[in-house]
Structure formats: C-alpha cells, structure tokens
Image 1: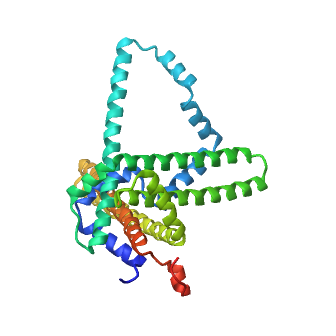
Image 2: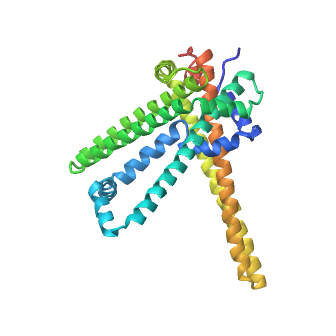
Image 3: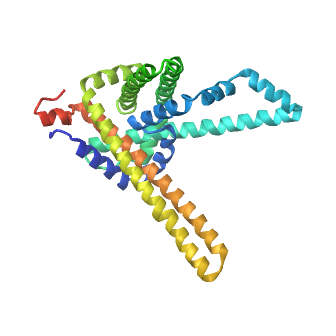
Length: 330
C-alpha cells in the first residue's frame, strides 16, 4: 500500500464533500459546534485575548453571572405571577429547542466522521447517509462528553490567560512579554487538546471504543504522530484562509453586484423599489452562499482529519517535513 499523503487527504476529502451532497445537511448543523482542528482554537483563544482582556468586558462577564445582578433585575421588573409562569414556559421552550439543536449538531458531527471513515476505507465508494446518521446518534453521548470537555478546557485556559493578563497588567514591558509567552504556551496546549479530541472522536465513532479508552488511545496516536498533527493543522489553517478569500469575493459578486445592477436600473427607470429589491436579493444570495459554503467546508475539514486518522491508525503517516529530510516515519 502506498504511503498516504496530505495531498491525497485533501483530494479525497474534497471529493467526498463535493460529490456526496447528502452530507451538506450534516455539515450545516455540525458547524454549530465549531471546526474540528486548529482553527476553532485560534478563533476562541484570539477572541478571549482581545475581548476578555479588557477590564470593561471582563467586568461585564462577571456582572452577568452575578446572582445580585439578576436579583436587582427581578426587583426592578416587579413581575406578577402570570409573568413568572410565562417566563418559566419560555425558558423551558428555549431549553428544549437548544437541546434539540445540540442533539442534531452532535449527531451530525458523528455522522460525518462515520461517513468519512467509510469513504477512506472503501477507496471512494460513497457512504450511506442513513447508516451515517444512525452511527452519529448511537455515539451522541460520547461525542457530547468530548465536546463539553473541549469547551470547558478552552474556557479554563482562556480564564487563565485573562487572569495572567490582569496580574501582569501593571508590570510594564516585562509583563507584556510574559503574557505573550503564556499565551503561546496556552495556545499550544489548546492545540494538543484539540488534536486529542479529534482522534478520540475517531476512536469513539469508527472503532466503537469507550470514552476513556478513546482518550487514552488518542494520546498514544498523537504521541506517535505529533509532528503530522501540527502539519495537518497548518494545512487546514491555510484552507481556511482560502475560504476567507472566497467569501470576500462572494461579498463583491453576490452582494454588491446585484445591488449595483439594481441601482443602475432604479436610476434609469426612477423606481426606488427596484434598488430595495436588489439589496434584499443580494443579502439572500450572500447568506445562502455563506451557509452552503460553511456546510461544505465543515464536511471537508472533518473528512480531512478523519481520513488521516484512519491512515494513522492503520499503518501510520509520514511527516511531510521528515519526508523532505529523507527520514523514516515517526
């Protein structure tokens, strides 16, 4: 069997994402949980550093979670019994809707992992949507635990970064240097955590392992392919940059172009409503394209990681850097 390469992983994952349009619906819901891999980590850590690092933002977060704040809100509103009953049912309805969306999103994530693994093992045969969905549903609780562990770990790491930022805020230049070092260490820790959860999801869905066993095997797999993991993360990050340029082009051609055409027609005919229709059509077209592109890309990135997981798990993957240097697989 030939040595699997990143080009093969990207090519096969794109074929699956483009040819198997039944997975697009799965990708639409799975993207609610964020991407599998490094991009989700960069976004969350960057947002934490930029937004929560400010004193006003951090004060607002603490205020929202303060019981005293909500007591003051309740006292100021002075609601009656009918308002409390209405509020109670509103909360129950919103929680039920959120639970339903969460169930579908987690199950869709598992369905994509299952479908991508089947596709990689069968050498190009498209997987069955129904079997993929049932596989995702059957592993819902395990995937939910992994996603919760990921979110809580990122929240903990982000909280540590914010605490360090406040602790070193008055130290000056030396404090800023220490903060940057701490942020880089936290970023690498988050990346490793992300790799572990990606591989654990593979063991959970593809190999039907238990949660603790999946995490242990994921660590062993990462230890054998740590350099490959970072290289794949970089490749996926570059594909996200390409997607960003595509979205910018979509804003120009799918939003501004219909608006400009409608503006020209409105000026020529004197009908203002044509311009309003052009703006509405541009918004609708852009939103449809954005959701569709995000759904396809969600399937693509999950498939890339799953494809490489199956190859790492079966017979290993050689690092691109080591291949260039002419060294053996690690």
